[in-house]
Image (tube, rainbow over all chains, first blue to last red; front, side, top):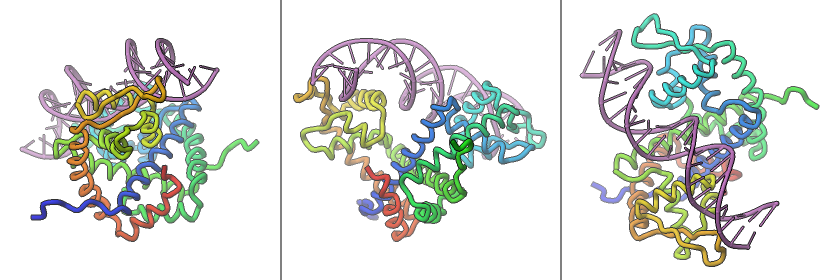
Length: 148
Length: 148
DNA sequence: GAAGATTGACACATCAATCTTT
DNA sequence: AAAGATTGATGTGTCAATCTTC
């Protein structure tokens, strides 16, 4: 057996540190814009969007967890808050009595739409400030292996 | 004035969602490796490394905050734990009596080295599983505008 | 016994307020 | 007044244990 596994070459370290910093920077700028507009944070948006995307039939919590890389208990607590805020409804699942179906309330849809009106432009601005459109497209292409 | 700012084009959305997911995935894999080895989390590593990198003179907290994109209170609380664990020492700053200088204890240096022996290979593995070396280099190049 | 989901206890993050020195 | 740093109160995330249904 190999006693000391190889440390990463400098290019791998550079790619990782920049990736982490880029994600943190963009997220911070979007969060700041949402907060400045009196809107809920990105984590709420992500869940609202997954539910809306799923259509009128709603979506199962574990499907949301898989797409958003959240642990079960994490989503459970997040949905608690969304329900308390009147944005999401929990209903028993007809097919599987262990499970639930999440749906948006009208307020949930409205909030998601208002959030996107801030989120979208803030994201565009943050990206455009650093990357040309061509580089943005190249970035999306390189990161395809990480897509859901 | 423009009443409705433009929503981002699909390529920008794709770049952002993949970037966020890539960062979350890589971080989760590294954290899991550290935890499996009984080592402290990435956030601790980052601070230990910034201090060690700074050399024997130590480093001021606000310099660490700037590099790691942490708020003042966030680093303050994190350093509390590192000091409690015996890995970091706080000393008054000779130049500026408002400030501090952070240094590593010998245990801090040893822990950082042991963590890197797990972190580095876990990172290499996680990257290599998805990206060719050429694509990793291209990625680092594209993300240069986000570097500190 | 495994999958879907929740909960109590605890760790960590965040906000606003504070203190000291510049 | 601003910069460096910390703190009390509170909100959010995490772990292990739990409950129900498959």
